[in-house]
Amino acid sequence: MTIQTILKLKEMKSRNMILSAIVFSMTILSYSANAQVNKEQQDSAQNRMPEHHMQHPKTDHVMMHEGKMMVMKDGKMMPMENGMTLKNGTKCMTDGTCITNDGKKTMMKEGEMMDMNGKMMMVLIKDDKSIKE
Image 1 (cartoon, rainbow, N blue to C red):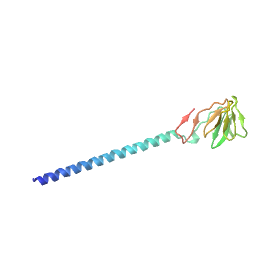
Image 2 (image 1 turned 135 degrees about the vertical axis):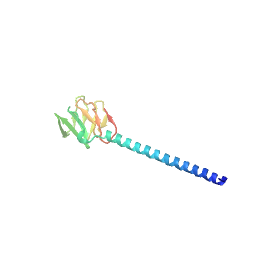
Image 3 (image 1 turned 60 degrees about the vertical axis):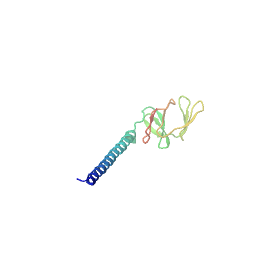
């Protein structure tokens, strides 16, 4: 074997090793990216509750639902026809504006609920990752 042949063989081995390393790295990266996408899809699916599975409390409350203020009274959900004053003095209007006794004005967001005592209740928003009380 000549020196030139030996050098060519070493060069080919180096190229093969580099190509193997590149293929290996790309394989690992693709598995990693796929795992990350699947994790995000799982997180999204776990935090998105189908609307027909949402359970509203059986207690009387007011809530913003599909952009309209609704009232749960005696287990029946109905649109809020007139503004109402809750037991703690909070006034809730049909547009979702609520004003507390001390004058603090808030706008109820989709899915937010307030019991008849004026206390915010569990919030379930189907496309949001947060669930708050």
